[in-house]
Image 1 (cartoon, rainbow, N blue to C red):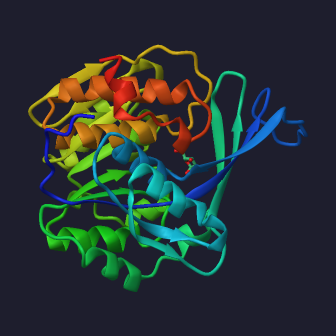
Image 2: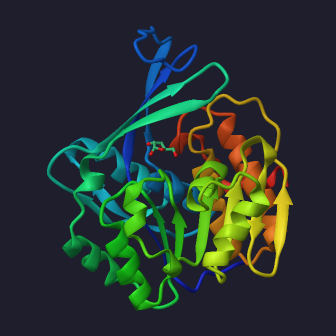
Amino acid sequence: MDRKWEIRMKVLNFGSMNLDYVYAVDHMVQPGETQSSTGMEVFLGGKGFNQSAALAKAGVPVYHAGQIGEDGRIFLEAAKEFAIKDDYIKVCEGKTGHAIIQVDKNGQNCILLYGGGNRTITRGFVDEVLSGFEKGDILLLQNEINELDYIIDQAYEKGMQIYLNPSPFDQALDKCDMSKISCFLLNEIEGGQISGGETEPDKIVDSILAKYENAKIVLTLGGEGSMYADKDKRFRQPICKVEAIDTTAAGDTFTGYFIAGVLKGKTVEETLKMCAIASGIAVSRKGATPSIPYMEEVEKFL
Ligand code: RIB
């Protein structure tokens, strides 16, 4: 692993942890239909934990903050295995969040979430976590935990750089002050939702930049690759073509590797290429957290 670079600021990811119950299906179950699955496996997941795993596997020291129930202690073991700092992973009363995931024969998925501990975060816990961070530190967020608006306000007040993956896109985001976000990492569906219905990548980023001119935008476009945009620069990167086994956590892998590239001082072009390889590898494997590659694996393809 490349150890020649040094990260001066701390990186905190305040996000979800889910036990993923993954069912192999012929096609997504339709309303009124009963379908037998051809297999079921349980993997570690949650957009939050997946993104921490991607950062850690890319070599970035990351603190993960969030809540699990007693039934989720396996996340503490996984954090140790991947070298994710677990100081702020709290075991709370009640159940760990979980996801019911159907993966079809083309590797596409659909996901049903149960929030559990991800949705019982208190402002006291937020304050406790943020007290360990300061101006210039990086905060990564997704939209699978409660108190997102409060976390954004408090972190901004401290001068942290806030990276937001607004996924899943729902009404909780309406309460968040998006002008406090330094970097949006989103897919084209979320891009359409945040931009009021745009579908063309350039129009999506135009619309976001018109509202938040200093933001950086990383837009993933499925089979069309990805795009980076800020007020001075735009760049497109094609995907790495692989046989899709399971697309779960491909976006999370992209997010973690993008931040790793930024922190390593790589150019946007180098970073998006690295992200395309990392997420391509994730798509070629089953599961969420376990599908995310280590940097050594990504470097073999660079
Ligand atoms: O992005 C993939 C993740 O979304 C899954 O691991 C699932 O837990 C949901 O959070």
